[in-house]
Length: 281
Image 1: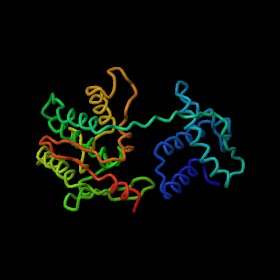
Image 2: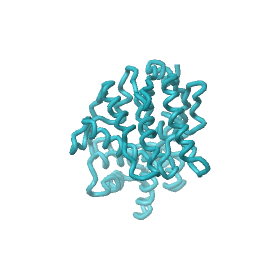
Image 3: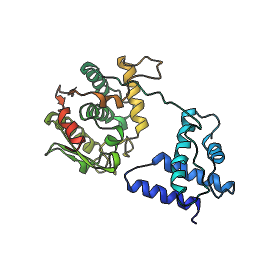
Image 4: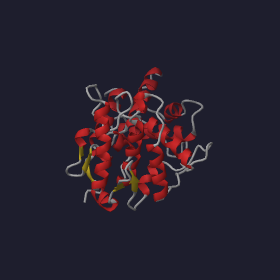
């Protein structure tokens, strides 16, 4: 019988081959293997699974429930080859997550957000590209329905402005898809890429479309910080609010969106066509 650690590796490989990314689950289960080895435990018990899941002690019930779900899924797999395995009951650590209420942005709110992005102040010369970057980034989200991670993972070869198409690689379930762009969207994206090329001329830079002022792939945390700051600036959030409209909510809008560029160029994508492309039609 293979070791618990090897069984976890086999389980993750099988699930990922089926299209599941299992980023957090993978990290969690490998940590669970270390936990079990430290306790000289050869097989999973509900008691051990519960003890591991409730770490760290100060975490939220949602975090504990998620960790236990990682073990529960693996335990079902492991029980086929090790009948001693106990599958943690769904009644352990019950938790009903609170689903965020979707927010539908108005055209005016999107426009105010993008104008504020374009007017961002730059304290250092290295930040000179940030206004155009966030103006383009938030605008692209608002008109294409891309997920945040999909936009962050765009690379230069994935952008075909001549054909007006984005190639989204490794999206949900590991599939690729094409997202059509309106010609005005291409113009604004082209303006950003031109400034990006000028900014990083003759200097090493990542092949990702959206890069930080260090030339690396733009980090999601940096995007959220910029979004929260701009949201408070234009009144989408109160100055002390910890909750409010999210970037993800831009995907809920079914109508076409308009983004003004520095030259008042219309940035309007036909969302209906984008939705067809996302569904593989």
